[in-house]
Length: 151
Image 1 (cartoon, rainbow, N blue to C red):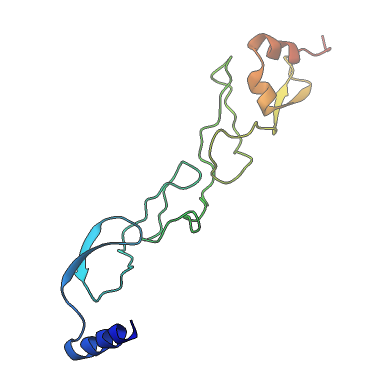
Image 2: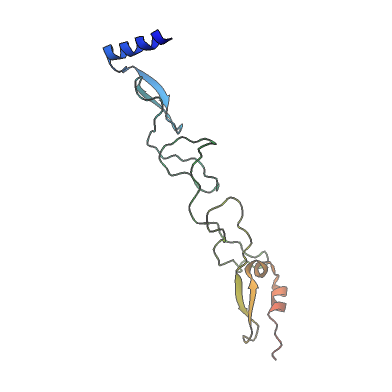
């Protein structure tokens, strides 16, 4: 074994790097390239990674890199861009607030607990209702909430 390694070193010195073309895949597994045999076994091709991120909404925009369970793409750092849900009872009642997770995430956004400011029917009494409750109220239930004691 040691003799073989010494012979390889000697051959390398005598004839230089091997230029025979071999096929190798980049570390990001984008495509196969023909490269000289003497080139590094692992290489990055420079293409955009494109692997789906854990958020499920975006893809990795880093340049070619090794992706494995031990070394996944970095987490998504974008803000949540999911459309805010509207009311089942009134499509005009759409949550106007940003997702409280802040960052992009898989699945639905958590219920919005930000208060919505409303006024009673006569406009004198200000009311505040959590947004997720406001969106779930039927039109009749909302009308009942907006009743005040002022004549």
